[in-house]
Amino acid sequence: MFVTAESKEFLKHLLCSGYLQQECFRILVSQIIDCGEDTLTPQQRSVVFWQVERRFVTLKCACCGYQPDWIDMLEAYEHDGLCTTCYFQIKRAESLADQAEPVEDSSSKPISESAKVTRLHRWFADDRDMRGRN
Ligand SMILES: [Zn+2]
Image 1 (tube, rainbow, N blue to C red):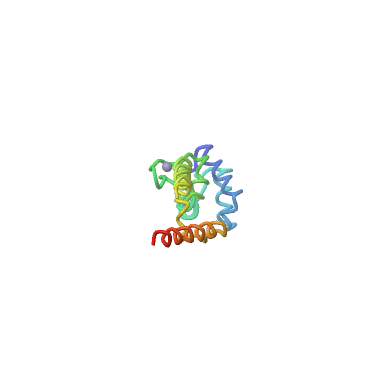
Image 2 (image 1 turned 90 degrees about the vertical axis):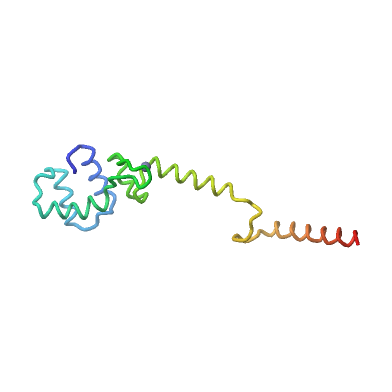
C-alpha cells in the first residue's frame, strides 16, 4: 500500500496530524517511511492495515467513487470519505441552499425586533382596512 513517495508523504502528514496517537502505531508508520513496508512482520502489517489503512485511507470517494490522490488523502479522512472536489461541491450546494431559504420563513428562527414591529404595523393596517370597509 505505502510504496510510492506520495503515499509515504501521506504517512508523514499523518504522523504530524496527531490523529495517530498511540506510540506503537507511530513507530510502525515511521518504520514504513524509513525502511519500507517490506520490513514489517506479517503481524505488524496487520496492525498497520487495521489502524492506518482502514482508518485513514479512503479507497473510494463516498460520492464519486474515485480514489483521492495521496496528497488529498488526509483531507478525505477529515471530510468523511469525500474527495476534495466532491466535498467542496457539496459545501457550495449547501451554502446556495442556505441562501435560497426564504427570509419570510420565521417558523424555525427567532424573529428580529424590527421584523416584529413591521408585522405589527401590517396587522394594524389590515385591521384598519377591514374596519374601513365595514
Ligand atoms: Zn469525489
